[in-house]
Length: 566
Image (tube, rainbow, N blue to C red; front, top):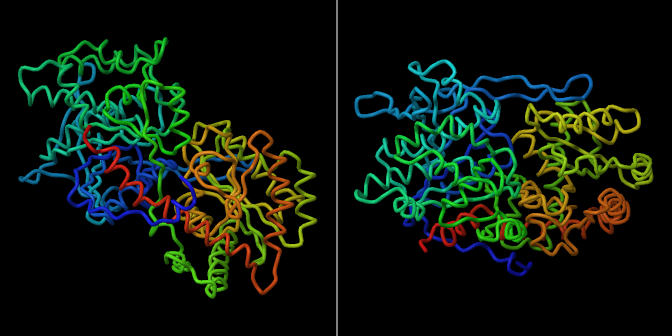
């Protein structure tokens, strides 16, 4: 996709007359009060539901009703500690789904010698419904009540049970309510067991066909969005575990459990992969960027992935100060107005940082931000490889410089906690305390302040590891310039005279050179009372994102490329 194509607004499609879709995901980021998300997957799913509402799409979200979330706190040594926060569904606008007699609608799943009961809650996002499954029911055993207690917490057994509830329980709840969506969309492989229940349902609807025939029929209603190429990642289980927990279900649907295991068998291993099962049991699959699709072809040559690059929900992320950027064109005479609007966003960010960290950042600072999940491939320490060099760049700059970092970690991610603590401790050191701040408890609110008020968005993943990466889209939408390795969505844009591409193989040196010799001089260059060249780049960045990387374009692509029948 070239920049000329990206400068065209997305085509408007009347989705109210299109197919109905059930959209399955383990997490949904709707707001910070209802914290049923962990990171980018949930934020994307939240944007998807918001855009479906705006586009009048017939889309239904399916997830889990977690009863606990956590708040990030920082210990004295700079490491993350977690404070559990209970979630009350009723306080967060959820209603229990009931039948005509006012009784909760429940379904069951057979597991070992018992049946797990599942109820459902509904949350409205405008006209869109999000159905959330819950096992915290009086008739369940105490251990089973905890299946849906918290996102991504627990051992492999707990994770497998959650995914059975999401996939199998999700389909059963949909049918118990009386709905029959045209398409079942698995956003990541967590819900891959839905393919089994869809096949079971199809077999009962079409009598006189066997399981394999029913599987082929049900596949025509199932699509899969892959977000990770690491097949042996988190969503992998031993054959023994799958056999233990799915044998009774396999018996109920009339197949040997070995047939289920075969669907998810990972290469020449004794491991069962939810991603592999999702690939095998869907009729169409998409990657989340063009480069991601290319890399996927190398790994899974027998499973072509359509490239549908992620997008962001524009109304959710655009600053109210920058409504001028929502216009098709920003007239030259309005460039100064945009710069002043950006100063309002920067002032809001500075105030937020002061209130939550005590740090005072000068308004005229060049603010460069890095904020996302702390995992090693994203290289959060890239900026700190040569501290003497970094200090020299800061001291010699003609404008004040401030680096902001933020990110939340899975409670069991000890490697990430160590990376984070190094940055937190540097931000407290006499050497960098005036130029580096870690913003705690990264969430939707913090993200909005950062993507609106920063001047530069830093993105440092190892090339080929970032499937897409949407935080940069949100920043670029608000005129924040990109400084990134050439990975994910960034690879689809010609950033010449717009942003800066870093050398992934020499990331730290490239960062120092780019900041010192390109970013600082351009920001400091003032022929009038505002940096004209910088503002022109802000406008170009926003236009490319608004037109090429919106959730509206993404949703249109899903309907025209992923959901259409073969």
